Structures are given as structure tokens and as C-alpha cells.
Image (tube, rainbow over all chains, first blue to last red; front, side):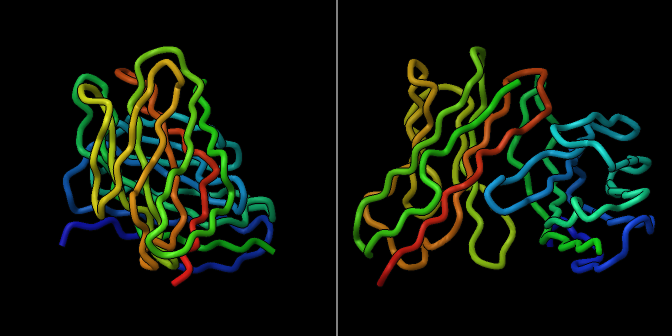
Length: 116
Length: 114
């Protein structure tokens, strides 16, 4: 089954304790992206990756890191989480962009993160 | 940078009523436009998209949207809603060729009363 998976689905942690949220897709998509969803703010893009070893900042990259060493995986790293990073996080992937056109994105199930 | 405005935060309709959700974007160049839906407890899925051509696009589940370039709008419509359409709807814009960012609106929550 074609899908985007995220782990963990739920995480409660404390301020300053490094964490990684994994994202994996089995559709051979070049493009992957991370979003956070907060009530009243919709989804905001954190980072995206056009291909292996190619990443760029979205609208809200502060406090996050990403890496894209393999095509299927795009982990989100919080080096020193803070309470304002409490949110619902979605990973998404998309077919290769033709002439730079961003195609339909397929979303993972979400990771609900609470930072105390 | 592009931005997206969705005019209604929460819309409440009775079954069989017609629906129109507003979406305006601010970007002067070529854009690609999307509507995504998030059913309760589920992840986002694509309803429809516009890249070029006919400005009236049809999506899944009877939804359609009209791109009006002069108004920078991409409103979502459905002639007769069902209780199962209860969800949150997000408009999103990508600033055309060469841009890999996707900007979402804040979302409109639709509640359909049986």
C-alpha cells in the first residue's frame, strides 16, 4: 500500500531533550516536506526537500533540522525542544516536480508532540 | 512571499445546503492552487487542484473550484452538502514553476447538521 508513515504518532517530552520524528514514504517520491498544524494557524511549512541531499527552509524553520540521506526517509530533528514546539506535525511527499511544478502531496498520519 | 486567506473560520450548514468557501491568495505571478480536506482524526487529502487550463476544476466527492485570476481567488463549491462532508478545508498555493514552497490558509471548519 502506498503510504507515508511517521513515528512516533504521539510523544510527550521535556524541554531541551533532543528528539527525532521519522518519516518514510514508499512511493519513490523525490519531494518531501514537513508541516506543523496549530489551531487557528492552519499548516505551516517547516522544511522541504526536492531530492536526496537537497533541502530548504519553509516558513517556520527555527528550532528544527532535517536531513535527506535516502530518498524514502526525511527525519525531523528537534535539537532542543521548547514548549512552543508543541504541535501536530505532518510529513508529506510528492511526485517529482516537472519544470518545478509542485504536485499533489500525500500526507502522513501526523505526530502529536507535547513539550513540557 | 505568497499568502493565503480563507474568509470563514467556521461554517455551519444543514444537509442539502449549498457550500461556498472563499480563498484568496496574494501573489502576482503564476500559481498552482490546491484544496485539501481533513476529516476528523484523519490526515489531509487532496480534493482538487488547478495548474492551468479550464479555470473550473472538478474534484472528488462532488466538489469543484473556480480560479478567477483577476480576483486572486480560488473558491470551493459544492451544490449539496452531506453530513459526511463535515471536516476542515484548507486552501493552498504554490508560486508556480521553480517554487517548492506550499503555503496553506488557516482553514475553514465545516459542520454539516443532519
